[in-house]
Image (cartoon, rainbow, N blue to C red; front, side, top):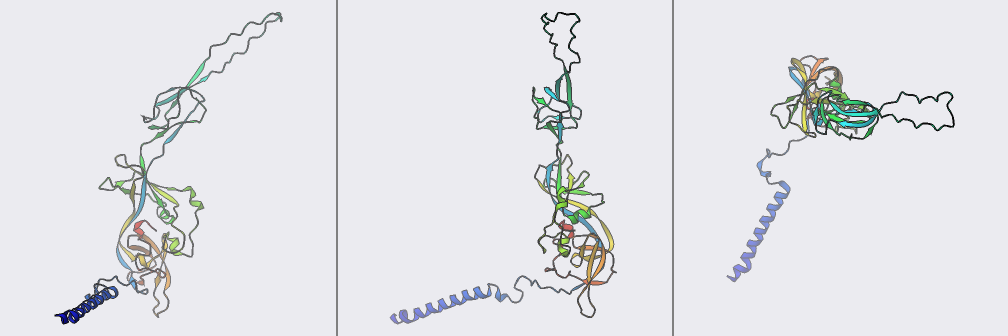
Length: 361
């Protein structure tokens, strides 16, 4: 028994320790699933065939511009005094809803006396004491300030007895309405030029998209001072931040989407605005990965039949969908072009999320 404890047990412990050490080393260097064979669920390789070709095909396309937007209260109208004088009467208070033409306040101003001082009669004794002048009773003119539009009274600053000057702001009339505002890159702004915009907003308070009441594009005053994109960098020209170069997608304008009165919204609410850019059936299309360009002018790259470098080929573009682009002119059905624009590091949509996602074209 002493021999077993002295020789056998230590050997068993050494074997167990060696097995555990080998198992830990295998897990550290080969992973827990290394015995599963070739199909071990590892991430696929990022390598792709940069000379892969794709054929121009006929198909249907729907173009939608998706824009992140924020709900804002529509600006109110400033109510300014139309006459100088003393505030004599106020008919409204903050929070009151009034209609166009309703009285807001009244101002009184002293009436200018048109009487000249009495002339001294001829032959009067200059030594005689002059009679005390008769002080006329003060007279005033009254002027009522009416509401220039309907709305809710906000920021009422006038009080009784206050003296106001012509043009002084005395209150604000808030329309009580809201709009969703979405920033537009220059490329998105270009898409919406000379177009009757039809848009809707996806709200967290509504199961169905809410149509915008007469949406419109408004140019930003600071757009003229924004730095221009590098003309030698096609990715910057497409307004794709993070795809090369240092220039971000600069906003040149914004899309204003007035909310209907039935919409349940509050200022600061984040929503998504979708702009319908049209659809077409049975037109020539290419994947977005194969097309480079801005607006309706673009280019694709044709393969060299003798194995040389691909050459750029101009095309006229139309509608742009999520994964496809309409080719209006420059290619024929079945003609093959380079599937991926040269210089793009990833085979995934080089436009940075697709032209349908509102990030570029």
